[in-house]
Image (cartoon, rainbow over all chains, first blue to last red):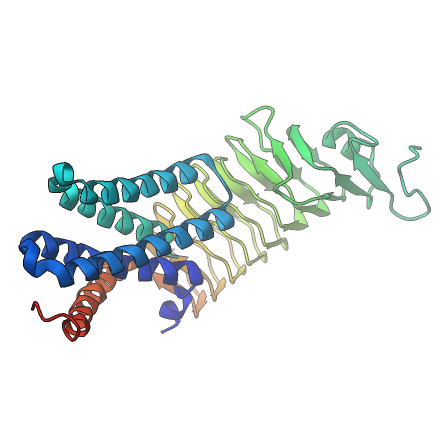
Length: 122
Length: 261
């Protein structure tokens, strides 16, 4: 049990919640793409909620990470790149012409969360 | 005498860049027992400590950085002496070591950072030293390396993300390693190589290839160390699993309000 208690620092907990939400967001996103538009209303609502919460957690983890580790060049570039990816994903989903790329961007966002978790585990 | 000194019958205090431009000049001019206080700034030097002095930074390791002027020499080299202290420096860019103790006893190393060296802190044939709150991360070989060094205390140090080992005891006996963190090193977190009767307690040794390695060592006490080598694989799998469960729960809750499914 001691090893488990050692990993329960605040940054790891927040990043872990982020990965859980990202997983939920990915599944709801895939379900939204799979279902036709008429029956996907509930999934769209779930996806929007999950995405919004995940985005908030992303910002929280970024602020925590930068305030703890200092505003160094590569971490700042990494966090900004992630934020750009989120914005592009939202823009792509809202644009009918490019919507077909949304699932790829969703998977990229999920992979970026895996990377965040890898970096933030004790 | 310089006017900035608190001169008197007891130890004097010398300020670097007030009284002397370089740390080495201050050390050369100081008498045994004096204190050298270094103002914030970058100092390209290889410092040889030859007298029992207390050398400390005024504003801590983040603001007092000593870079090796000659990369082939240690940043701080303390050789064949006793009773000195080095407190609150960043010592980096040496292809030998950030802080090198050679046959030095009763030395206190405290609150130093030694990144980007071959070895962060290197003790060779040095006994009864105390290393506390030092940060020896991101070195090319080892964070803290003890060779033929006995009765030393390493407490609350960090030796993370080194390219070989975090803390390495080679032919070193009766040392105490307590509350140190040695994580994310490419090989071993803590290694005891032909080292006997050491006490390794309450250390955090996470995400190394091997956590604590003992070879040819006897009589060592290992207690309450936290090791979890594969945590970075296990935790994401658990979190994704929780995410899937949470999705089903969320769908159940939402289906109470939407009749589509």
